[in-house]
Image (cartoon, rainbow over all chains, first blue to last red; front, top):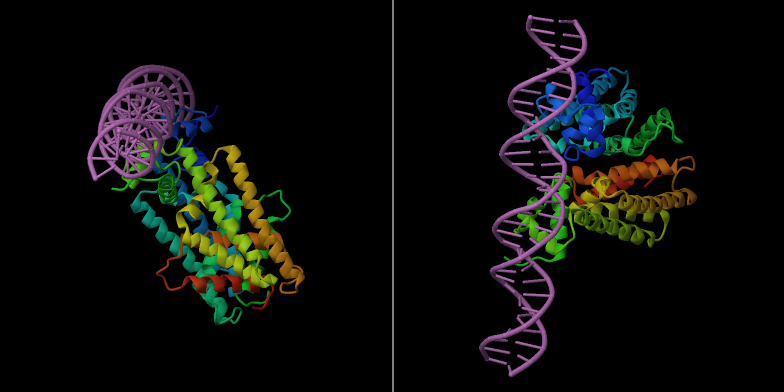
Length: 191
Length: 191
DNA sequence: CGTCACGAAACGAACGTTCGTTTGGTATCG
DNA sequence: CGATACCAAACGAACGTTCGTTTCGTGACG
């Protein structure tokens, strides 16, 4: 029975929030998962809402780091491929955090929610810029609605964790490639 | 102050579940929305879980009716277009129900959840069959992974209600058309 | 045509339970 | 020794639900 750190608590909260939802998780549930009493959690964090904030901010940082890395790639279509692969990797490497980030934002306090929404918009803008660059480089049709295209792409990406299984028919690398091809072709490109 | 029917209660529950989540909704909250006491809801339904079941089954039926109608269309690509338009129309015409159906299924009792999951698989099969037919008719590339394609398509469709605004830049009919084009091109078709 | 009876709908209070959180004590570790 | 991690017990509030009672709408009957 090792003693726990604050990060252990946050990680546990991420798992529980991802599977049972924020309001479906009690501090006692969370304590059970961690092998301590629910009340003992207050030795590490100020409260339940603070846990949600920590998990979601952690998720947001993963996505943003991935997007920044994608922008370092040479060539717009390469950036698009990297963005897609990066997003899928974040989701599958940090499943609980990512899921909580994607579906429990609504339970943040209004102030925090607004901040997170802003960060999400910024993340979407990364993709929009990449798609714009693709159009500029002639990789994509000139008449595509880039805003809609980014929404379609993120819709596909964000729901990956709802169905993908690491032990399934499709491998992770194949999926990234397939999504990339699908999006590119969908916008008039030829991979 | 009119008296309420069971359907009024279910509709109210759908709205509340869609915005605040199942566990984020108390019977008293729901009662407040409806202008009655939380306890008065028990004159209409057996309990909270029964409300969730009613809302979700209602949502499922809308989607299934839409899919069946799409299958009546002549020609595989026409069916695909009708399926997409139908799905978007259901989501936007029954936003609360649809949203609850899509994101609160996890809070159903295990038995009910299994049944709903089955219905959802059946719905996805409608789309798979349509896409298969498209391949057969030569509308789509022969090497597309139809299972993945159906997942991509449903991902785009299911998240529409998270961002679409009836008063926004893009009109509903344009959106349906644009998604149809995007999916068709993504799978190697030429609209 | 009025009224009376009956079922449905809503109230208001209370049930036992669970919630998030607080407090005070205790063991462990640097 | 001082700080940290945890336990144990308790707090008030809120939860889903039940219960007895009251109000309301409607259709049958005199």
